[in-house]
Amino acid sequence: ATPTSIMVGTGRAAENGILFKGGEHLELTHALNAIVLDKTGTITKGKPEVTDFTGDNETLKLLASAEKGSEHPLAEAIVAYATEQDIELVEVESFTAIPGHGIEATISGYKIVVGNRKLMNDNQVNVNDVEQELIDFELIGKTAMLIAVNGAYRGTVAVADTIKESAPEAIRQLKEQGLEVIMLTGDNERTAQAIAKQVGIDQVIAQVLPEGKADKVKEIQNKGKKVAMVGDGVNDAPALATADIGIAIGTGTEVAIEAADVTILGGELLLLPKAIKISHATIKNIR
Ligand code: ADP
Ligand code: MG
Image 1 (cartoon, rainbow, N blue to C red):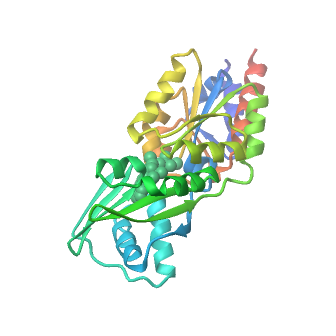
Image 2 (image 1 turned 180 degrees about the vertical axis):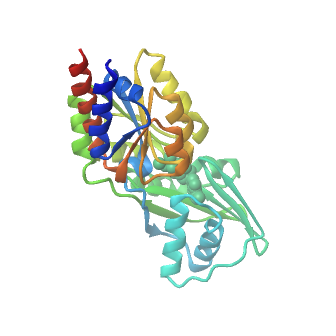
Image 3 (image 1 turned 135 degrees about the vertical axis):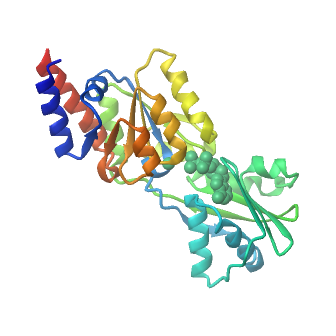
């Protein structure tokens, strides 16, 4: 590999909004045969909105007050929804985030738990009666969160996040370039499958805990693949560092950008096949 052609290649990439931290990453990009994409904020816009809420106003007040303490995009959506309804938020006495599952808080002596089925099970909250309702939300790609107050189910809040317009075309091009395309997410299997279907991804790894994403990348590498990981979140950072090429979404967190080898500006997914194309053109010139 001549240093000059690598420099020309990374320069061309930069002009397009693809920032390689070093020339060696451009060479490695040429060797990739699998690409793993985080769902929220990478494939989707990462701006979820509440579409359904089945509880009463008192529950909404507790729910939003509790979520105020969380930095998760799901929490922001819930707080925005409550604010639109002129719900007044109250002080919380305690707050705990349970990564990959939800949150717990104490407010005016009430214990409120918000999150997925697993979190309800762990807290002995019976949600059997709403299982079908949950499935219906998930089948259309919504993330449904269950709400319990003092150990009893009080409602469901469903949130939807739309896919980026160019995602289907970007994924089509990546497949055409011979890459295996895989979606990786902490969200539940059904919601993940619904979003995957909208963008043309047929391999989904769902319900992965934040600390488990890097292990999943390693498993794919152990099958003999050269893997790129694309992500935006703090919880994607270990997976970005583990992958042969870590690609951060420019609109994502600083932590992800630091852990990655490449950053794509503006989160434009069409820059992914573009990066592959530039690496191929560069390496071809070298040989
Ligand atoms: P993602 O990979 O989509 O960012 P996470 O691993 O952060 O997912 O979260 C997985 C699941 O945990 C969510 O789909 C949701 O059910 C639950 N969860 C996470 N954070 C919260 C929160 N602040 N409030 C309620 N539920 C949450
Ligand atoms: Mg994300």
